[in-house]
Image (cartoon, rainbow, N blue to C red; front, side, top):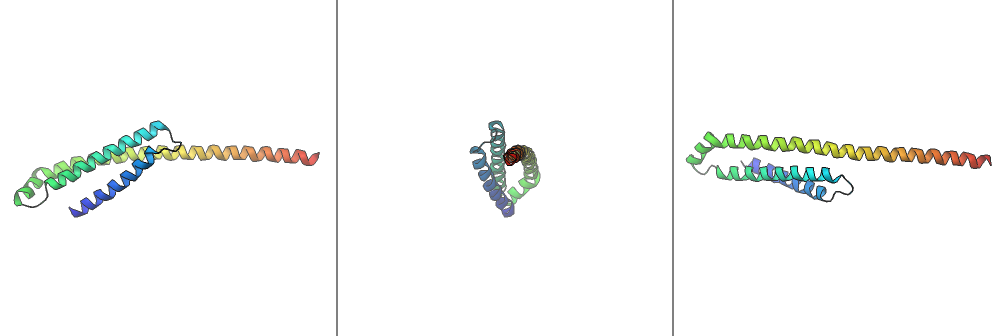
Length: 129
């Protein structure tokens, strides 16, 4: 259980960092940032539920161990599935963000090539004169 709690702390740290980046979009589409923030909020809610569920079934007594065996595993399985769904949505959103950045780089490269071509043509004309 300690291992799971450490993983949750690590995940929450990453989610906070992503949330900070998404809240200061620096030129990214607003709709994509809103989607990412929504996904991160969903992930955060699930991690809180996982933490609460783990503490509820903490094995202090035989009774709680029995409760974990009867329903705790099922509860955790549902939460794990929910977290996986959020993770998949976040991967898609981050892929879209990467494509947006890539398209911006391609546009800049095309503009650079056009600028260089115009500069070379202008330079060739001035050499002829």
